Length: 156
Image 1 (cartoon, rainbow, N blue to C red):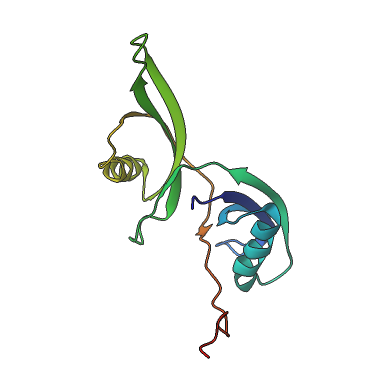
Image 2 (cartoon, rainbow, N blue to C red):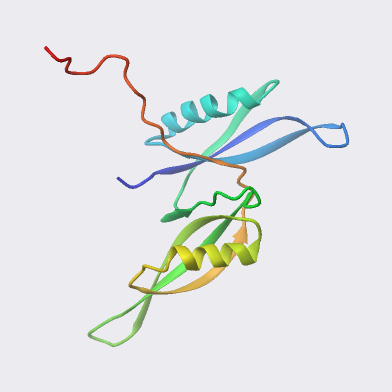
């Protein structure tokens, strides 16, 4: 099953490094089936990290064909890449491009390009990186299946 991503924004008062308190809005990415589930899961994930009041200010669908995550601690930023897959129209012989957005976790722009190329190694189609830009996304929350306390069909 393909992931359905939702970009959720939270507004809260953040204490900055210099001690000032400032209202900020930060976007996060949530894997969910609907807007309602995205909001519920986002609140569950973000609540333990919030000390005061917070408000979910926006939820919108985010179309990402692929997500390339990194384990390194230095890879703390998210980059959005627009990738064009190139196919040839057999009848006319014309080149056709279809664009897809991908999200890459990396330390910097060069690292993002490297990780994207490494992630695309097994791809049979030709592709061109149209653009890569850093996003304001703070973190992503994957779907986690809930484990039932009682099995659906207990052994009889």
